Length: 310
Image (cartoon, rainbow, N blue to C red; front, side):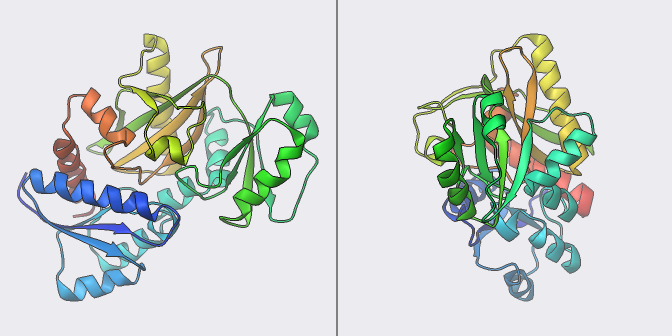
């Protein structure tokens, strides 16, 4: 495609700032290799976009922000008002996917299997003893967080309160969710002229058994890409990933995280509208398994974004 002037937005002020800066650097390098003219900007507030527009209006903003106003639809709404094309989902898709309680309800109403879950506000301590025993473990996480920041697995009742407080350190709402034993997989979804298609699934085997922040970004986890799956399971994961992408109102690209239980049944955990783009990130791994280099993947995201919003 033609050479474009692209501004990569990264950084921000969420707990995922460090990861976003890594994504921004990788994206800027990949877009440069693809032949584009690239400016990398550490954006400290969403309103800073207007300062950038006064300086020079790019052909496209590539959003490499993770968490907070960079992923909850805020920056996307600002760019819509400014009339400048950008990558990824729009305000509604981002807002739905960012809130795990809302997205869980949306998925369930669309016939997509999700684990049992309960929203718990700061200072509330519901009696979850029966639920803990029924499921054999619970996952406690912030409702709108990412990169597994503030997330923990609880297998004993005495650990539930500290886990809730850990999630509440990030925000005032926590999601308590049934832990699904089995395999951890993720599926990247890319829109091809507006029609979502799944890339090959990637299986994650985290060191220590829990894919937390350290396992994601500190090394030590093992990835199988493409995942070694029975054809029927691979097809089901692809179908469910595209269904979750559509149900959330996502566009351009997303990443859908799954647990597959010992019976081979997939459960959708969440959809990521601004997935990581670092050297360890999962979407580039999936693209490589499908035969796309990282610059080719970025080039395609740029092209689809300009078709949708240009």
